[in-house]
Amino acid sequence: MSVTTELREQQGSVPIAEKRLPAARILLIEDDREVSDALSEVLRKAGYQVQQAFDGRDGLTTAISHNFHLVLLDKLLPQMDGLEVLNRLRRYRDTPVMMLTACGAEAERIAGFSSGADDYLAKPFNITELRLRIEALLRRSMRPVQPEPPGSDTLKDGALQLDTRKRIACCGQQQMGLTPIEYELLEELLRHPDEVLSKPYLYHRILNKPYSRYDRSLDMHISNLRAKLTDVLPERQLIKTVRGQGYCYQ
Image 1: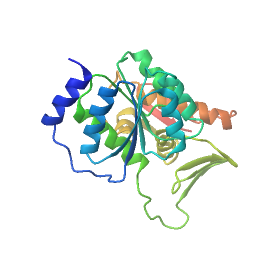
Image 2: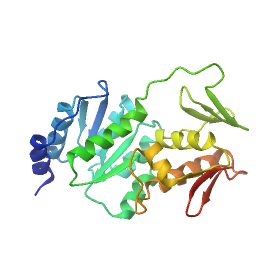
Image 3: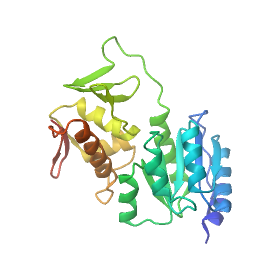
Image 4: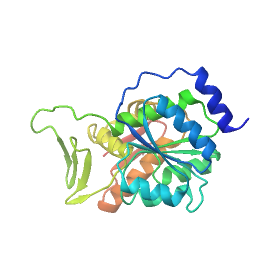
């Protein structure tokens, strides 16, 4: 059964939840027009604003030129491969990106996360799972700023500084350019110095999904975060892996 057929069949069987994020704007970069149209219809019925692009080059230009809350990105695209689109996009924007691809192998998922993807969903997928994952990513990118007492909007550790209102991490005057998930991981770890945070806790708290020992998405986000921390603070090893337990900021 084709992806398009499954999407259309699921439209009638899956109830659309009440939209929680009414202003959410999603860019769908998918070269198969039938799949793109079917998926766009599902998302629009859920209340999202959807813009479509049908090749990698046009998708990249659109993603950089406009403000989106989420990008749904196919891997196998004409003009420019999805991973290349993601690599180039990360130079300019930290928009959450979910990769949608027929390549579900672990190596493909690792490549996606290494390039800066926030989530990865293999085709064919279930509409309910897709919707729930979209909502989890949008809760991060569209999270309203909560009032905080004076002086509580900054976390510091030496030259490293987090602005919790703007959700920006800097080292000295240099902004680190973290993705939303990388920022949340760093903030969570920095709020609990020298405390081991377990993988199940971080999956629930940061990734909004249950822990699975076969899922390496958290490991890849930690690896990317470590690399960015090393770039600005090469003399320090800030995130320690505690074997069999989790991660610790030291």
